[in-house]
Amino acid sequence: MTVFADQPARHDHTPTFTGRLSADLGECVTLRMHTTLAVTGVKVLLVRSGELETFPATAVTGRPGWYEYGLHLEAAVTRYAWQLELPGDHLNLTMSGLHRTRRGWRDWFQYLAGYRAPEWAWGSVFYQIFPDRFRNADQATGVQSGEYIYNGQPVQKVPWNTVPDRAGDIHAHYGGDLAGITEKLPYLSELGVNALWLTPIFVSPSNHRYDVSDYRNVDPHLGGQAAYDAMLTACHAAGVRVVLDGVFNHVGSENALFQAALADDTAPGRGMFTWRTAGDVSPDDASQSNAPGSPLPYHAFMGVPTLPKLDYASLEAQQEFLAGERSVVRHWLRPDAAGQAIHGWRLDVAHMIGAGGTDEGNLDLHRQLKAAARQENPDAYIFGERFFDAEGAMHGGGEDGAMNYHGFGLPVMQWLSGQTHFFLPSRLGGAELAEQLWDAYHALPPQVALNMFNLLDSHDTPRALYRLGGDRARLRAALTLLLGYPGVPCIYYGTEIGLSQLERGAMPFCRAPMPWPDVAGPQNGGDPAAWDMALLADVRRLIELRKETAALQRGSMRFVLAEQDAIGYMRESGGVRVAVLASRENAGRIFAVTLPAGDWQDALSGEMLGGGKVELVLDGGRVLVNRDEL
Image 1 (cartoon, rainbow, N blue to C red):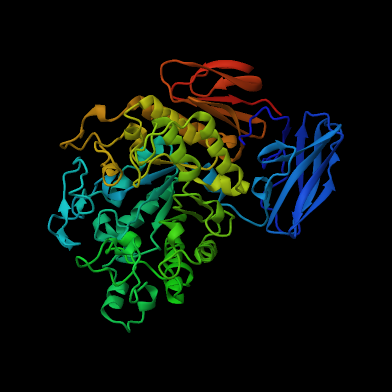
Image 2 (cartoon, one colour):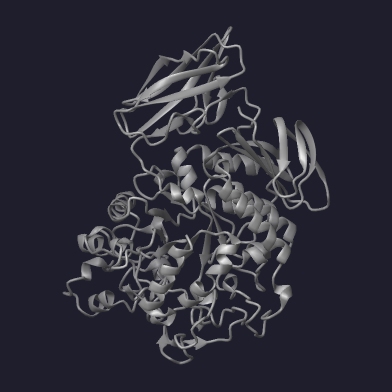
């Protein structure tokens, strides 16, 4: 059930209602609830040791409608609800709203004790960079055509603005490098982003580098360690944090550990990989092979021969990659001689990591990884690629958050585009979209909901503008929803200027090079029309608003609008309310929205509005701010 802003009883995680987040076990936290209903009494329902217990709440002196309760923290996760007693009736208040029936546990409020969120991420706006396609600053380091053979084909060097195609797929190298990121830091700072997620930068033979050969060295074709050090120094000076991509489900087939294990059944590291036994063939793993008609002798990610899967039943694999004193996770989080290090990991196919070619032991392995990361940097931000429903893994013990495809990016883009990311037609309406967003949001502990990594497109999905049929008003609406939503927003490189793709599908078409105006080439290079400057200006302002408004970084969320062609939600914290509204129409259609009483200002245009029922054109999205005290 979607919860709307006009609900007559309220409680959430913000300081108005919750004394503080992340108090330790044994401590007491004050919880508050406000209602406009004529209650005769209020109680708090707690789940303690599996049993349901009821305790009276106290009316707050001098504040009509306010009640409070001191919650003593006796468990890592405490689930609770408010019971409102009325003449001849009662209601239960949970994250699912007000009901006469008792909702299931996943709908109840949650208090997560002792968990320390990387709160810097809440105030960050990330920018995803696919290094080979962002900027080539050092012509001497790039891959040359025919330099080596990979997966049976010679690699290619292609001109910068070449349109990606199937023929080039993993073999076409554009020459983007880490020096290019350093060179364009002024552009990124002007855009307003203050954190980068880089897809893999370690030694690898492909252009995507998800087939890592050496996890402890930066690929020389990206400039090697010297370029990495220079980039990290420049990023730190600019106040930009860096998160790297951790590929810990599989390695590349040219990885020395795998090659040694493949060549010798008695190799010391053979147990780190997942080998087949007689008759051990699964549909995915047998889909591709080294020789026509014969299955691989090892399990591989999606059956791709160049991506042999690690087996975390092996303690050696756990120590090498995740939790050992010299593990890969620790290596890049550990400060170097200059005191520099990355600030976190994005975990590739996090849901697939496990033992025996499966995801067995997945959550325990993530807890190990997280513990090791936090020992190196107590503020490390760890988020996983969980393309589907991640709720079962989102309790703070493992990843801090997940890439929020399920709970934001996929449904929002499906609603705006009228199709799924696989281009299946869809008649999804705004009411169902709001229901999906709320369902995913409300079931998470509040800190975890704020940790979720929100995105519209990425290196794995079709470009947002392409999915929207080139409709830039809808793209602006999507970006407005993104930069206001609970969680950590991320912009895929080029989306802010309207970078699209020319061919239907995802990879490799969504990985076009950034069309810098000073780089001539066969497509768009040097053409000012390749940059939508109006869109860029709007994105800069939306980012600025996000970074200067605490309510957008850590506030609660409720919906204010859910119609077939328009949705809107409200973020709130510390007496500041922000209404984020968007329509998928761009013909000046007017929508009626009911806002809480007070003075509201359009954050981009400056227009002033009153509270109550207002009629608005929502083309491209709007953000309204109210600063009245609650």
